[in-house]
Length: 282
Ligand code: NDP
Image (cartoon, rainbow, N blue to C red):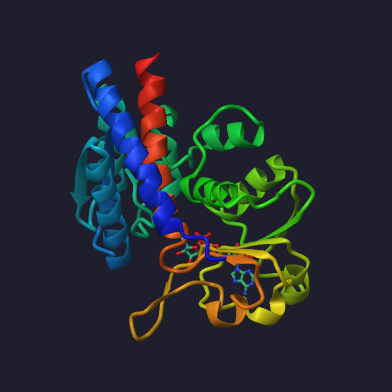
């Protein structure tokens, strides 16, 4: 089974578009997301364009703030504080990675936690791990929506997450744990990655290395979620999973592109609506 993220994302965006129209009628304004990008990294520019397209589709207000590579950290923090103070802004997204002279953590910590649509602020991360209501990072939430939509059984199953980043690996491990999976987190120092992956009923791969997971590393029938986005020398987008050799072994698999990527963007829309609702009801 192919887990079609593109199709599910479209369905969810259509529903959110109606929800946004209803919210605008009820409250006299639309949810507003400001997206900030520093520099001209081509991959980041493409992600930002897709995010803006989705906000337009859903009928949000918002501003794309494009800043030159040379922008100082102070200037960026000043702009974030301005967005924090602006009552009509519900969500703030700073596209990562940032130029090397800017401290990413300082930027994340400057965003008002109530407007932190990425869910990266330490207070939102803490709430996630303490089982308190919070803003959940978009990619892990998109993965959970795909699993839920495909009725993948989770309770009591063994989930292996390859990668331990703050934005994907750790939060998806926590969400799977919340669904009563038994969770293993693998990383670059894991001895015998293949043996660990072969234990997985659900295998989530977020590494950033093209086709690192091959068919013989996958348990027959497993659900395989490929988070990786890698561009090959000839410009093709490929995941971290070798689709050709894994698809015949897996029970279900996400394609790249068209799997986790569109779900991530859709969950950004979801989080923006959540921030809007929380702020308007304050
Ligand atoms: P990071 O670089 O932050 O983390 C990569 C993780 O992979 C690290 O924990 C690292 O281990 C681990 N790793 C590296 N090499 C190996 C290896 N040989 N064996 C096992 N583990 C390894 O990446 P991100 O989590 O930010 O992103 C991962 C991928 O997902 C990228 O391709 C990124 O582009 C993509 N991505 C896709 C999104 C989407 O919407 N589809 C959203 C976000 C990311 P260690 O900690 O030991 O260094």
